[in-house]
Image 1 (cartoon, rainbow over the protein chains, first blue to last red):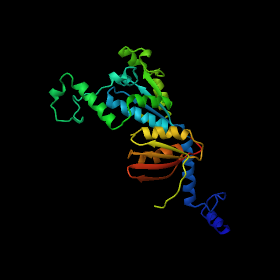
Image 2: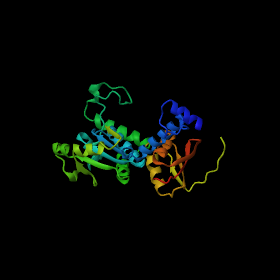
Image 3: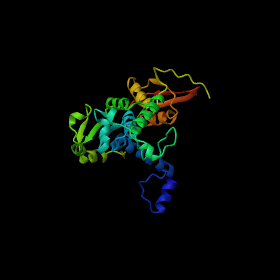
Image 4: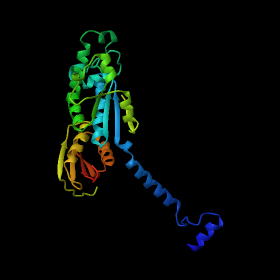
Length: 198
Length: 83
């Protein structure tokens, strides 16, 4: 110890630095301090999503992520804007549909040209097909996911501006839905590490 | 694999459920337990093999052990002090 101190002094280092502190010690201390800081950081426990799409298939990702975030102990909110308002509309069951038109990724039982997919009745058929498939695979329904989200305390927030554009009233939406604008989303997003636009 | 006998305090049957329901129901079930108690989760969702450890880590609960039994994935989670 005395020997090392002497060596340190020779190279002009400060005397109060313990000579026995190795690089490994420094790394260990730094690692634990960083971990500590991460657990104290409220941002790691906050998630906020924007749901902007109003089709049946696109209703799933924001609800799945939000319920999982809330189940993982995060304070979670979803802002529903534009067509995403369909998801929290009281009539979501009827409003959420899928269309095979212009969606080449949608699996069809037989290949169909676009002009056939545009015929009346094809949309309801595609919607029914997707619901049946999800039901068979035991995927949670939108009703289930909304109920879970509300039970887990996910805040469902409707965008006031798009409500006004589409002519919606607060009573058109599910009980418990809140109403706000871009500033409210940003206030939430700036303290959340998880923010997604869907 | 060494057979370790873990005694559970509660069992959650999440067989047949797909993402995100096994995690949503696990979170609910663990809430009912006291810190230190163990939840046995039985799931068939292959995604839960990645999701349950990730969930346990981010919520401060401890995944004691997991294994496959036929079609089932069986997890033992001990409730931490935090959640």
